[in-house]
Image 1 (cartoon, rainbow, N blue to C red):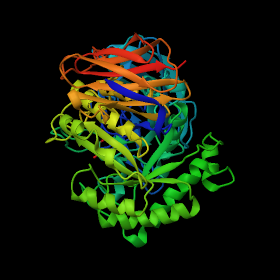
Image 2: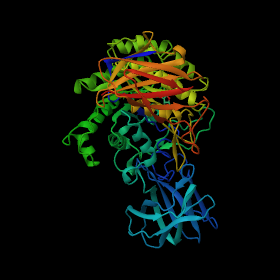
Image 3: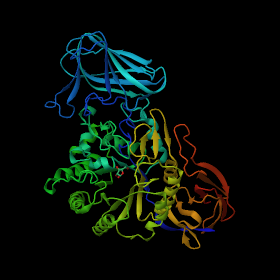
Image 4: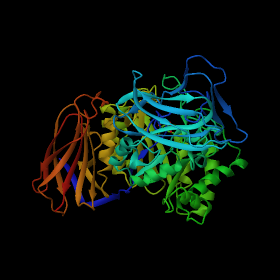
Length: 632
Ligand code: AHR
């Protein structure tokens, strides 16, 4: 018998409790949600022709050159110089693991060019995996002078292909310079030109996340300070966003380094816009003057920290300042005069040690002096076991940090054992943001094994503990979010994509069920007057939703057998005679979803009957159950 005290709120659930963590890892941004199909569109990858190949009948020296003009254009130094003399010249771009092309869809091409005299035409082709043309148009450059021009043209694909490529055949003779060669599908999110992949954004929108944490993760820190994430380099015209090597362009979890760069086509303005589109709070994380400590341990000298702090202050002004302020005006010029209403930011990602604390103190002083109510998320370095964590955590709580960001990448067993972790946590000090977590099937090689049904079930069990302690743990986000099936570094990711499709893992459905059933007030659910933390393999939490007038109970059955439970609803409120249950279950703990079978583990809804204040239910083996009981 599980007793639920329906009248007694033991904690408020913050409206933004369950959020998402976005990082450009696993080709989450470039090659993922950022819908650009051309890889290395501005020739700025370390090897300038990465992603490109040149096909010609006979090699004509000097026909294709990459010119570097870094003295005059620091942010986008390289361009392609074509001198067409021979009879056949074709440039091909492989895309990010190919290009996903859809039959009947419009594709929007654009480029920057400079052509002093007319003479060259560009035949643009989409070619499928068998090299057959599946979309074609001809672009005749309009302007003939010595200035750079932008020209665009659209055409429709005649076939669907998962791994197509794009080519430019040059016709005629003469000289032309090219840069920012770009191709986007028409069906971007909200049909924004050069925007985001709509199917991926829709997966997020469907979760109704309370916040989006961005842009990471380790990429905030960078392998060194030169390659840290700097938000000011990610706004404004895309040709001025200076590309850098992605911090995940490394050998990791026994996988070779990919060609992985950050074009910043998805930059801070787009992140804010995305958060606004899907009704989430924006939660940016900024570099605290320290590069990734697992990598280089490079820190900026304390007397040179000012620009970093200024970036944080300017970001708040960019998000919230009115249009008479310098950065508020910039936001308005980018098309958003209304403030974004930013309420919080993180200082540092996984940073620790006295170096972190002294830098954090400088940030905190400057930000709180100007914006006293603004909330700061501080880093606890890593997972909550170990001396390093305890030391930092104690110091942060002593200094009355608003939020402490805790990360757990641990085994399923660890998750189950720690489902009660916050039950005895100090209530009136700093709040906790569980900013990254995922079950890692083999914790010896972090990131090597995919998350399966066992991972999701254990995550659900831990999340009942987070929800029960919603007065302390006020925000949480699973990580990482996206991965491309052909280009990933970490395997335990929430949502996977190929070039055409997207699917949610069992963890996606766990996260979605929590976020869409968050309620407003935590209420007690007990068995023999104890919180349910693993007795008979069951884990539970309960909330009341004052807006919809419902009781919502979440119960995880981690046993390989069906279990009968009796819910005893104790309180003055009257209950309707029917409710429903969303069941997420599978008899096989190793079960995965996939592109071919995206819904093998997905919630199924059925109606339940309620007799007075009693509900009798059979929980399926290995199941996560969300039960909604309406008050009358
Ligand atoms: O989620 C992947 C990585 O895990 C993040 O970049 C980092 O913060 C953590 O170590």
